[in-house]
Length: 194
Image (cartoon, rainbow, N blue to C red; front, side, top):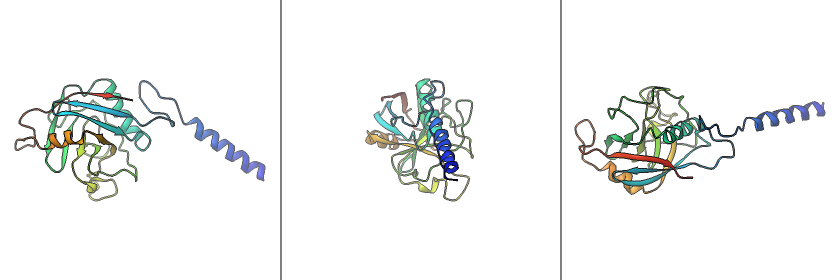
């Protein structure tokens, strides 16, 4: 009996370890031993660094990194700025309705919350995120997966670790009645820095 239990334990361990795949260059899925990814935003309002939650949000982080590596975000504007709430970007059309042409599965983790300085996926409904993201300018934990209403769930996948004052500067720009900056705030580029 003990030999059978030991065999089952060994097989389970092998299966768990075998699921730690090496990074696929097409999907940019981090392996189980991956370091935490960091990206630098180069914007018309200054530069800042975001640390991604590769381990806690691997689907969302790898999607973001894939788009960064494809230079998808280069030249895109922050199209929605709501002072004291969020700064949103990632739409190639600049209208709030565009994306990469696909959507990803929502990915939530109990240790990630929409608190100040975090970056989250923007979406219009469950499992509709693609390229749009927003920075939380205050604690917006009512946007977490375990809070009501169920239609407003936004997956956190990183946080600003350097240059947050630049994000704050973006959040304070003048906007029109549709929350679009009067003067475009441009993401010149986003690059992985580690």
